[in-house]
Amino acid sequence: MTQGDHFGNISGHVFKDVRNANGGTYYAGGPPQDPNAAELARRIDELQRLVAQYAAALPNPEGLSDDTEQLGAQLQRDRPNPNVVRGLLDSLTAGAGSVTAVLTAVRSLASFVTGLL
Image (spheres, one colour):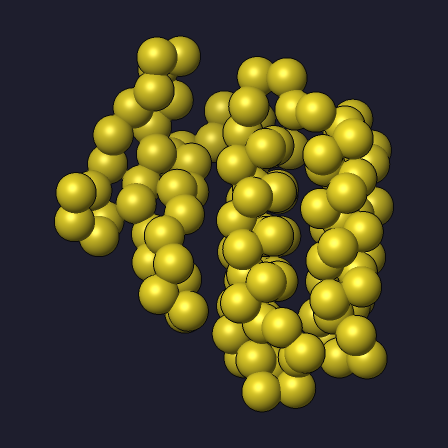
């Protein structure tokens, strides 16, 4: 699969293979089915962008990027596990350290996700 390839899952959702700034791969959903999905995708993308932008100031940018990818994958499931989601959000909060822009994005994402669960 090459960057930008599109594929579907059994539920008919379309996904796109995306490379993040750290060279990792995550799968961004295709055209969102509802406004919450669009907003969630926007917030996850924004967090990934901020992690890449402030990587030098973060204690473990690779870990933050991985946790963000895992959170996105967990939330794309038909029934996300609330305990896993909360654990990833806690890890993201701790990993943001004192980098205000990243911490603000994590808190905003956490607030949004908590409202969805």
